[in-house]
Length: 298
Ligand SMILES: Nc1ncnc2c1ncn2[C@@H]1O[C@H](COP(=O)(O)OP(=O)(O)OP(=O)(O)O)[C@@H](O)[C@H]1O
Image (cartoon, rainbow, N blue to C red):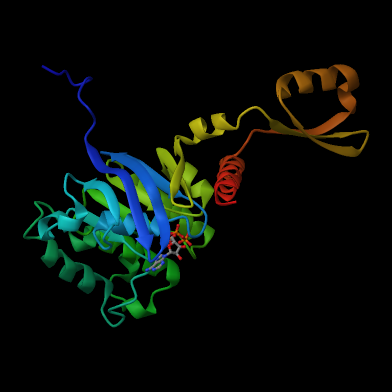
């Protein structure tokens, strides 16, 4: 008999060799992606990499050209209403129902989920969770961009989903709204989430794992630290010496700094050592992959 440790973690999303072709253009070229229960996974990649296409296939909104896909144990091409009710989808902003009021819309949506879900959110609890209590009776058309986005998230959460898709959730947020949104996602701890974003700090803050997609292929998959280790080595050292600024990229920053102080002592000022950030890692991986695919095309 298998013990708990030996049991595989339940897969919420699994794709194998996922392919998508629009006309004669291959947009997804064999994507292998897994998301395990309780994980928050960020899908990153340059414009046109295929993130939205991937998400739409997983949501059952788009039919794939090839490969195997399972979401909550079901092929999305054959997902029924009960399966759909287990998903939470936050698309780009909710533009309909501008004349409806916030509480009214959420109460109405709970009716769709009730036949399929054991528990659905109480609308007022949900409104509190997304920080819209003061706006519960406002018409949706009068909400600000950030408030509307919070409502989008609430719409995705109504049915207490087993898997939540967030497509660029904080576009257009001011820094305070963004921080509020990040706290909200943390409060959902335990919910499996697949999100796309162009905000690398956001990915680093929220995601347990980061998957980078370039030109329809997964080029990296791991924690932020694991990705950093792939291009590890160099750190940027900045300092001022006799008033003159120096910026260097060095392999062993500890030895460099030790020797710098041994040689120049107190003449060294404003020292800063910066390890590779997720942005550095991301840009390096994207450049490397783009070069490789250009070489293949050439
Ligand atoms: N319905 C469609 N018909 C033809 N081509 C499409 C269609 N939808 C998307 N594409 C193309 O597929 C590619 C991938 O698009 P997709 O929207 O999945 O990228 P993305 O990674 O989400 O990009 P972004 O970061 O800009 O949102 C793009 O080159 C896009 O032009």
